Figure 1: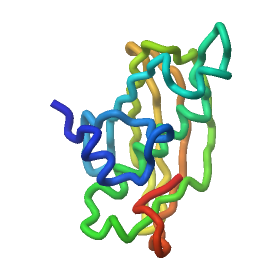
Figure 2: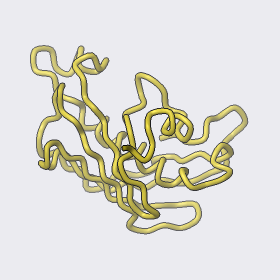
Figure 3: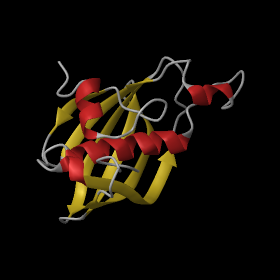
Length: 153
């Protein structure tokens, strides 16, 4: 049973189709989160990346890490509807294997350093126990502007 299903994720993140890249949250601790993304052939990016050889773009794998980081940061906040999380830095991104339709991407994000308005986190994306990608992401927390959703990256 997931800790958060898609409805719980939608309550925390402002992302919507086709840009929401998480399907469920499997584990959620104070400094760690594990999320999953089921990669299907009907993802819009597969039309052009690449015809006849579909591969999930690495930048979207990192975006999935950033979205998981957003859930980790915003999830426990009682006033999260008034906050926004922005991805501000990506370090040491490495891509080890292609992610293809039919794969289930397991994303683990762990807090390395955190302050009230800034967090540096390590993200790892796995497919069937094999590392697909890893990166260090930095996010900042700000008050959401009028009409802006609770989080963004």
